[in-house]
Length: 394
Image 1 (tube, helix red, strand yellow):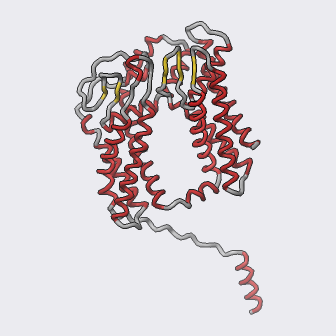
Image 2 (cartoon, helix red, strand yellow):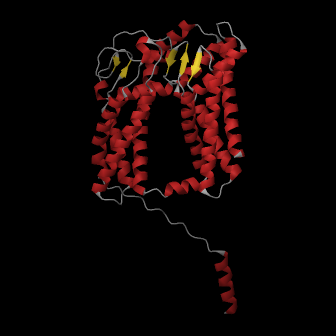
Image 3 (cartoon, rainbow, N blue to C red):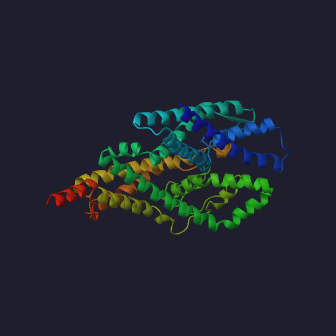
């Protein structure tokens, strides 16, 4: 109980301090005249709730396109808190470890929800219910990762899961991460090729040194969103920027559309290149990677069983793709920007087709596991004493 309370309190204190430094730099060092310290504290609390994935309402307009990169702050703190709990509590049973895990999650979620309620002002508002749910989810996952990293009890519990289930989950995650990695490379290439446009937008804002820090933090926070958009583009679902604007590899020219003056948005392509039609082939390649991993991890199973495992892994990988695409959808203002981003359902459907096509043929390939070299077992002390006694008697 005490360890969980201290872990949750430390996560809140460090997280609020980190967010407060960024807010203070833009609040008192920006171009606009600074307001009162009470308003700064309210914005700090709402911004801290934003780092847990909670949408913010500014001046009556909902902004639900979350800068998911900022979630790394509470995620890293939660991971370290989980490792600290294992060192302090030193649980001997899995039940006590799970109790500390759940208790830390509940306390942290309640703190974030309370800060969300206290920080509400007419101009900046967050949902306490959403804060409770999202803070609980982020804390549960991050603290759990720390517990798994530091405790043998959690790893032993994972080892008791059936091998087929572990192969399905592991292969599906590998396939989804390979797709996300390809999307990240595509987003990097798009940003590098549009570096001039990004610089022009940044120069036009004419920010101060403190505003530059805020812009940098927000730009880094929206990197996962841009990767999600790149994934939607890669699988063929495209990215919607309004009712009649779709950025897709199958749309030759994107009509000009006004976007917020935010530097990362300048990296969006204005036209589809000649090789864009071949981008969905990368999905098939990721599916082939899933099949190869299944053939290696389930080498002792028959071909039909491996086919079934590859199909399930591809379907589950499409679920991860759906979740990642959903992270890139939301509102970036009112009117035309009230709903932008890729279509998660269409993207997951297209991804599932390509993954299955690539995974099934490679899953039936027989992969040979390399035999592990057996290490020499050193003689124990008892055997040494027995041999000495035997020689003495002789």
